[in-house]
View (cartoon, rainbow, N blue to C red):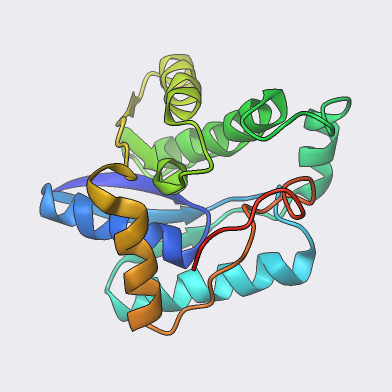
Length: 183
């Protein structure tokens, strides 16, 4: 099995991608880096739930620093952008850039993200960020559209089966009142 870094935003969104990657002969190494998540107690809940899920399923788990100040500096001036707008592109760039750097630090030349499992995120936008960052670092970005073949629906079913905490918004404070994620 080929190792791949799987950037993950939360346990429910990671559940189906982990399963799919394993089915496709990859060994996912989960990396939790999400400076956008607000408030910090939400960040902690998602982090703990993902770590617990990975441990239960024998998947390596790592986490980056919680750099919310870095997120706010990066999106300064784009706070009022709509979902799937420039603010989201900047956020994808931040998270995928750190994921590529993490992959390199672990000697793994391939990475992908759970972000494409959400019907509230634009996979084309995510893949553009991934390709750009992969080229920057000389690594491979695997363009998995995890929402295909009912990926989101399956991830929610896995979350229910495992009694996981499932958040009601994507993560940043600007999506909190605009997006409600179906459980």
